Each structure stands twice: as structure tokens, then as C-alpha cells.
Length: 57
Length: 263
Image 1 (tube, rainbow over the protein chains, first blue to last red):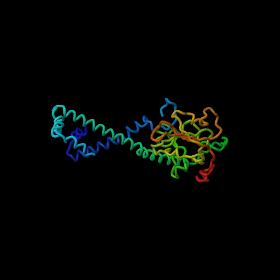
Image 2 (cartoon, one colour; image 1 turned 120 degrees about the vertical axis):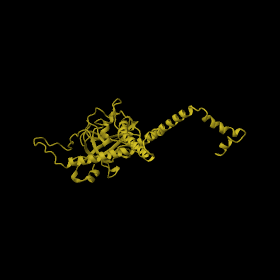
Image 3 (cartoon, each protein chain N blue to C red; image 1 turned 90 degrees about the vertical axis):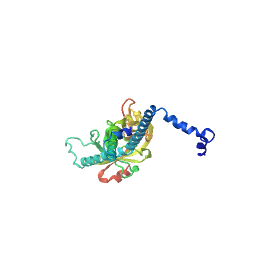
Image 4 (tube, rainbow over the protein chains, first blue to last red; image 1 turned 135 degrees about the vertical axis):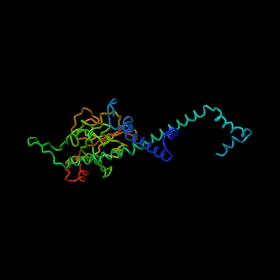
């Protein structure tokens, strides 16, 4: 997976390392600001209110 | 102990034959090896990546949400100070003067309308309470259940807050003891509640937020406060609930220290 990704990146080793780092940061940002906030309400430990069993918390 | 294990393999008789055989078994099927190897490596990399994503999510929950909530709380504090410093809108002269306590006006969902102070949690503890208990409301700070009483009013002022994430305003709710003061600051006064009891209930136990806690349908005569949060920590199988009763109302000009000691 990562070997394949490395071979797809253009340029020399230094440029590839830089691009890989940029990709890593981009994925992290998407996870932190989009995926995790969207996933969080579906996980149990954020539920702090008392509600009817059917109501979303 | 450890050295006896590898020694047992090459030791007696066929020891010289077994290592090449093991090597051959991996090498002989010429066509299948790269595919199996690539698949195994891909799967391994995928699993390692998934592990890092889970770790990142834990870090997000424990620390990154704190950063988000701190930013929101800073904005709420700025907004509420600005609102409170503005001269109050003059009430029409014909309106009858409301008896003490004066309920604060209902805030819009997500807006802050009161500041919570609990001396047990330190002098720096002053989260802004927002209106509403949706996911977005609670990310900003402790949220007031719409429809329950307002601070100081007869009935039950119910507030929910996060236990472990988003600055965990109710992280230490289990440390509150009977008689501890809980001060709710509104525009011009402090309401001093004192803890009466705490309980652990099922997540669907709506009776705890009734106007008279745990006695739904009973007409309230006193001003109560109820906090709810998830329990145990890092889980949500039950809810931790703390009840308190209004004991005193102190004008802000007399100072927070007077309000803390009142009642």
C-alpha cells in the first residue's frame, strides 16, 4: 500500500518525502475536522443527557 | 530458559536439514509468493494504519476537543460580558415589578446566558452555560435543557455537560459533596444552590429532570438545580446526576465571595 503510494509520487526522494508528508498532514486534517466530529455523536461516551430510549442523544 | 528453545531445533540429527526446508517452502511456488506477500503486506499496513487512526481519534477526543471548546468558551465569555455590561432594556413603566428572583430571558439555542461557578472545582472554574442540549450546543459548554426552569426560578434548572471531552466541564461531578455551593451567575446577581444529593440512573430516566426531581407530575414549590453527565467516565452506560437546591440570591455588587458563603 505505502510502497505503491511511494512509487506513484513524482520526483526524487527528497521531493517524494515532502509530498508524502503533505499527504499525511492532509489526511490528518480531514480526520480531525471532518471525520471525527461527524463520527463522534454515534459513539456512546459523548452521551450526557437523559432521554427517551428512542430519542437521539 | 530462552536459549534452550532454539537449541532444541537444530540440536539432534536432522537439525541441518530443517532450516533449508523452511526456506524452500517460502521460495518454491514461484508465481504465488509475490501475490501472497503483497496481500499480507497490504493487509498489515492497513491494520497498522487503522490502529493509528484509532489512536488519533483518542487523542482528538481527549485533547483536540478541549481546544475547540476553549475557543468557543472564550467567544461565549466575550459575548456574555458584552451583553451584561450593556444597560438593561428599560421595562415599560406599566409592567408590574417582578418579584425576586427575576428569571433571565430565554437565550437563543447555542447562546450563553449564565456562568457556572463551583468552588470545589477551583476559582478558575467558570464555564458559560449555553441554551440547548444538542450535540453542537454541548460542544461549546454545559447546556440548559430547553423547557426546564431558568436559574433562580421555581422548578428544576437542568444542565448537562461533558464528562471527558470538550473541556469536560462536568468531569469531576462525582467529587461534589452534600452542602457544596454551586453558584449560577446571571446578568445582575448570583444564585447560590447547595448540593442535596447525587444518584446514578439509567440513560432514559427522565424523572431526574422533572420539576420536582424524581417525582414527575408533582407541582414544584422550590427552585432546584440538576446536573446530568455520562457515567462511568469514558463510558455512557449510566448517567451521573447531582441535585441542588436554591438557598440564596446575592446581588453582584456584594461580590462572588458573599454568594459562595451564602445559604
